[in-house]
Length: 167
Image (cartoon, rainbow, N blue to C red; front, side):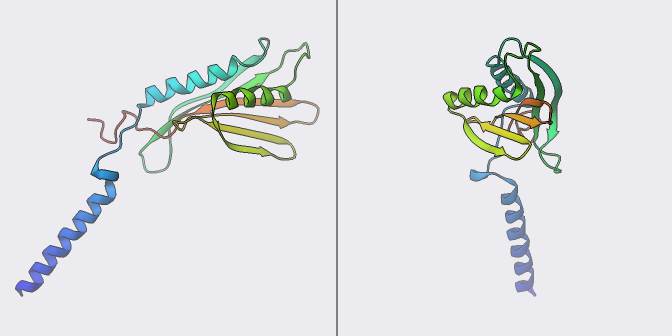
């Protein structure tokens, strides 16, 4: 009878220890991140930096600005993302297809790593990532009689307040 109790207590203790260790990061500590506000600021900086590389007569139509989009369905980390449309000048001095070579060369000089370079029949997607996991991207679509270019940036997944426990 005593052996059963000791076995049950030992099994319970091992189960609790395994459950706790699964919730902790390496070294048993919670992993902190930048806050969502810091991530949003960096996303804005990356997007503005890319926009300044474009011809001065480009029109930027801000389409999407999201802070706090869930990274998954766990209710945990979130991200920040921005998307814009790049509209060439009416003068015709440059086209939407000129956006990719301009930005890819700039991002290469910055040392960003290419994570997506997908050129299909009617679209080209080009995503780069900096050393901290932030991505900047351009997407170009062939719409038949014209091209459309979209420029965006997104953060890695972060905790809203920099830690899983906001207190």
